[in-house]
Amino acid sequence: MVKLKNTSEKVVLITGATSGIGLEIAKEFIRRKLITIVTGRNYKLLKKHFKKDKFAYIFKMDLNKTRETKKKIQLILKKFKRIDILINNAAIAVNSPTEKLKEKKIIESFNTNLISPIIICKEVIKVMKKRNYGRIINISSGGSINCAPKYLVYSATKSGLNTLAKSLNNELCNFNIKINTFSPGPCKTKMFPKNPLSPKLCLPYLIKLSTSNEKGASGQFFWFSKKINIIPKLKINWAKPKLNL
View 1 (tube, rainbow, N blue to C red):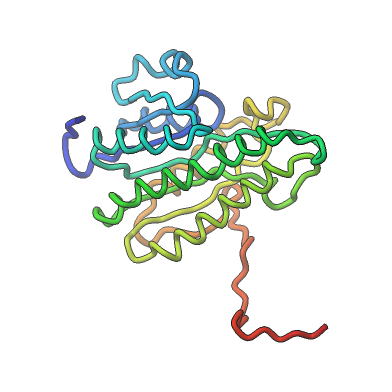
View 2 (view 1 turned 90 degrees about the vertical axis):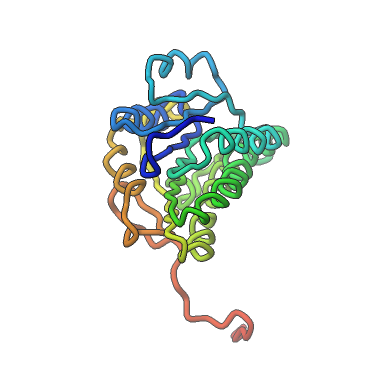
């Protein structure tokens, strides 16, 4: 078990911290001297980036392996006793015409982009509810809205993250747990190396969301600072549909 100095010391967990947005936000939390748990599939790369940082704790985690994900999160919670800030960042993107999609890639995408994030949330909110505090950010994509051609599975899984935040917010709004979705726009990452924007541009917005007070936003979708209402509030009685065909 890691002995924390005091109960106000924040513990952060970031998935996909080997490169891109995950790497940059991890560095920023470490710079701010927060206990930062960095995870990823490439353990050697994590060690290269973080082995000299005393506030960084490295865990190899492959989100495609959902059972392993659950065991690893439970191990982390046993060691640190809590997670205060969770950044669900890890993802994979498959660019393929739908009829040529391999089933293995479909399953891998859903495991990595959506199922494992749900499993992680499921485990960490148990502790967040007891502590009456938690901040969760799901890194989504404009692809969840514009549904770009040949990115069917990527768009579908990112859309799932959007509704995950909304549903969790509706469930946990009385526990001071804030869950939001953030779209980084066309940032240059390992998945999208030709994109023009630096991942560092995301940092001020991610820090603001992850350190917000009890009056902070929750259940929202942000594109940088812009809040986008992707799930509108409709005055509809779903149990009594009016059918005008």
